[in-house]
Length: 164
Image (tube, rainbow, N blue to C red; front, side):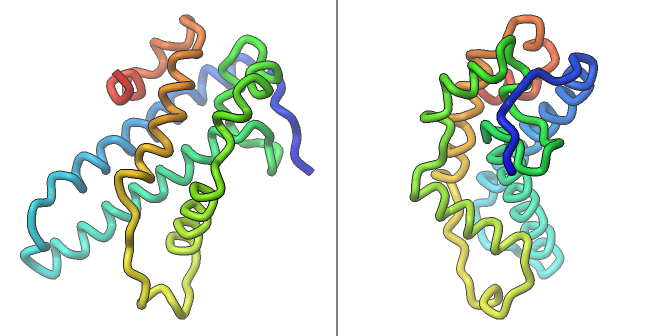
């Protein structure tokens, strides 16, 4: 059963800010690297490297999508609302804008299927993940950073660089 957002131990929240900021920074860095590719991979080695970078971008995207849920499904997830002064109220106030649209849910389901599962269909799948998926997360990161209490902003330098 999902647990509504509630206050967490402040020292744990402060400690985990670094990890959340790391996810934000890597999400942006992997997207910048992907966008820098102007041609097909020139070698098998480069092709494998690019596939790994692409999958890591998808993994960071998944982590950040989960960060913007307003309830804990497993009971120990770090959520955006935990960084707010009134977590439950913030989650209620922003639930509509943080909730994934039907199209976004479908895309996230496809990402989860592609990244987390070995399937018979995977070798046949052509990826169409890209800017719209990046923007799905960026929209929520902008909301989070704009609402983040000032005392936490310094803990998120990679996020600040990404949204500014």
